[in-house]
Length: 346
Picture (tube, rainbow, N blue to C red):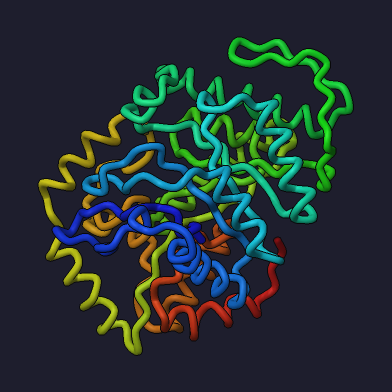
């Protein structure tokens, strides 16, 4: 699940689902608000906590800004005992050797529960605001590949040197050493270049939401690319549940959301995300416009039985991690426990 660090969600339905922003709180009030859902997730049995990073967002056609991902990860490391922590890391905003040291420290403090989600980035405005080079799409992915090279090299070698176009290291001797023998690399993106990077560099690939007929071909394509070099890649899928007693009740809820969609905000969003090739593609499915990462388009919508069968269908396609949010109490009570009882690994 996403860590609760986003100030406010995107406002694509003419209403803001988070009328009170966590940016308005500080001290104990803030701590209480962001720890309660994380403690619930750990109690339920959620395996991963993803700490996102939005350097700047307007809470209109895109989500709002977030608290800093490094500070938040360290905070949640102290608040959790079992969940693995994934930190969204934007190459360009950080040096990989410094992140290798920071990550190794978190890894030791948590007993081996940390991993990076390498986020190449698409929000051009935040790059300019923070003085980070806005490279073209494929160059950004080339920078991300080098970032992973240095991060992995620093973790797996006692003495590591690297001479790339974007990053260098000269006999880097990383201390402290991480607990994990091998770092697990996560990434997002769905463009051709993103798929190539997943096949050559990453262990996990996060996918935006969508139906099986969209998700299945992406998984088969990335697996085929990875197989050429003897690698394997696993997949996580974003899905937002609407769980009701009957399918009809759940469908009525999602239809009311579709009816409330602000088409002007949707049009502004399409312009804003133009730099994200392969993500948020135009679709006839109105559910793709309801949230930031197309979670409703996975259609985890219906009775508990319907949703469980839908998730199992994705699993048969190769989805090993369901990336979701704990906003639906019936889903939390009647679906998640049954899913966690199924055979799975971490």
